[in-house]
Length: 581
Image (cartoon, rainbow, N blue to C red; front, side, top):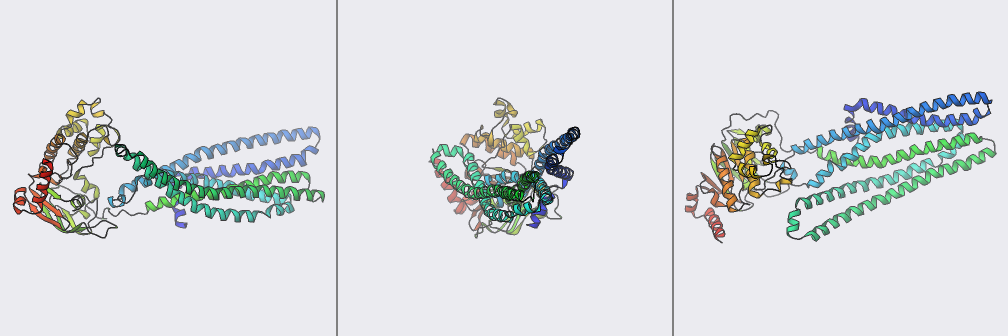
């Protein structure tokens, strides 16, 4: 916990000037609160017994002093509420930027086991609670300690016996608060988990809303959500039960302290141990004394909330990316595109079985290689190893004789273009989505890439051409149109190595023909890997690799593989029969 707190405190460093001033104003605010009852005591015990002229002069001077103090008190609270909150927002900004940057470094293997909604809650709800703690926590502690210690010293000065009476219940109050806070910490931690689960479920439902509606399964989704929502409500009920006991007991104890002081004070007045003015002042200070106790105990609730969020924040930040640059990683230069797999094996994390077993493969620069095989044979996995989306378990992948683990990740991926079956387009315009392949590209370059991808004609038929907003994930476009935009993006990138991952399998025949033409134009003079679902699209490949669960079972041209009457012939015949049907 000590290390975590040290890390949390480090986020104040860029804003230390604001933090120090915030603390100064917090101390001033608390000090002014302590002084005002002393002025009241002076008036009730001294001023009212002065001569009229002297009393009025004294009241006038005291009035000026109190107005000046009130002005300072007002500005102190303004600074705390305004600049203090801005400081908290800036810390939240820094932490959000840090965790987002960290998310970009994590590999596919991490995201394979995560839900987007749960990750979203880490950078929204959790961070808000963390920064609320980091803003309000220090100033609440400062104000409360000044008030608590100051009030206690003043109370002892006014009447030690009344102070002793008031303090009888304070140890019990703190013990009570400590007990309930332990209960609340566990409850709040469970709330975090449930909120993340709910967020994940909502994100999943909204992302797949078209599938939900196409199957008319709204009721099933509502039932799934109700189950998760019930779990969230149960967690909330549990935390509110402890919170209710905590606040009820706290209010009772603070009021009970005042009752004890009144009863004891009345007895002491009759015994002439204290005066009426002392009792009145004492009651004013009891309010000041119990209020910081309440604040400090409430702070523990805020601390549990914020610190639980910070622990979840650190959970992410402490995950080391399993794929990152070596210390002496090099830039790829003058890439030819010669690729070799040397005794490569690979298995996914948390899976006992390996997907690839001792694969040896050499692909000459500029070659057009097709990968075929049944689902689960490792076609996509094999290609995902080239840009290091996943790390080989053993063996090595080399580009132009250089182990890809010795190449800087950005440099490696800058030289590889990927066109996937599930095209992802960002919310925004067509121009923005194509230029994603080369940030800062001119409009002429984007248009040239679109023309090469056979996309220019349909783009110009849209209402705003290249400035047309395509909606979330390009929902306003057809499958073929989206795929051509993704190809245009790769054309603009202009990499020497290409990977087509079943890029036409989800398209109708007409769209497939247009997209296939674009792909072939893109593949010219580049090292190209094509993962094919429709085998008819790769008949002209220079080499076809047939993958099975045991690795590369066959290789050769279409004609050579058909003559072998092996796995490829069966796959091709099956595909052709299905097409005829």
